[in-house]
Length: 503
Image (cartoon, rainbow, N blue to C red; front, side, top):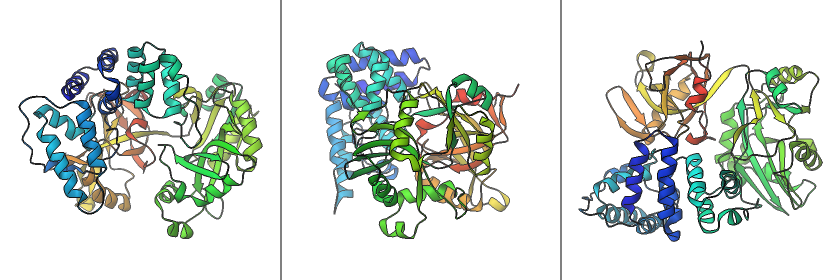
């Protein structure tokens, strides 16, 4: 398949906001793609090379001297191979070898292909082919039910592999995906609830648990081998020795657990989120001087050879208590006084509570209504689109943030407001040092960023506004913290912002 077919489809995706039209464009391309190139087609259209990060920065690409070709001759396979060469270049002289390989690749690309490659390799490709739409397109192209595709993706964690199975073997091939020890699956997510009483009434019978201000973890154990993953499926086993030893000591041969981990003060209260997250980048020497992490597990997805994903939460909870009883998150099934649990969670320094339907299976990667979160204040996870240079005391610092909500149909983030409130001196210094590495362009007042950083924002709600393209604006927004554990695809949608609109 010509690489130009991908570039043309990308332009068509960017030109429409219709989800149906996007699915039609993608499905047609998937049907036309040769099996050997299908993985690369899916990867390119969802904005990531098959190799992941290839070790080349924005500046290197911007400085390439490669006049565009006159005719489109590149194939998808040749582009994928060239990027594999770049990603595989290591050791002495690797920088020069990467530059040479990229120069050759860009020199064989026509101008539109060069622009696509630049955006693909810098993470700026936002053409509307996010995971949800691509999954629907795979289902349409292969003629299989969407739920079957989504379940296979949940278990494989890899869109290209899911697409290959669907296109080559249909539902039967997709059904062969199983939970595999040592391969993380996407975490189940919660939706916000209007109130505790409404959440309990909607999901009864339910369990009410603390919603902790920690880092999401998924642990896999098979015999003595243990793996620990973050919510983005990044492995951090080497950075959390105490968690590994604790899981290795559980009374089982194999297990997959979902939970939170956090560092506590001597009084047992949660330490700042950033202190917990700092452990995920620590060396073994730093671990010895660091605060210990304590796990709180709330779900069991596999135990001693039995997969539990499709079992109701009440059965998964029984298995959890059996294998990890001393390390459960505080909670109670169908509590007589759920308000007491919420008050207890808040008094202990946590965010609120989660209400979970006891009859629900584990819907990995989905933000449905089987889990509802209840917090006393409104918060949103938004994408940082830019920052303005400060004035007065903040002169010389990147301060006022431009904030965007995720477009659920795969378009670029939708700007919903600005704020500089809540920024400490430490955060101002961090932003000023860090943001240039995410810069896409700038003007006299603002540094604009590639949409890669997620920040948690507290707000009083939203209001109708013609100032921003989404038709809404944040009310009294302030920065709570940055979320290095989340990706832009995890950010809240423009629909979530609109749901907070004050009449």
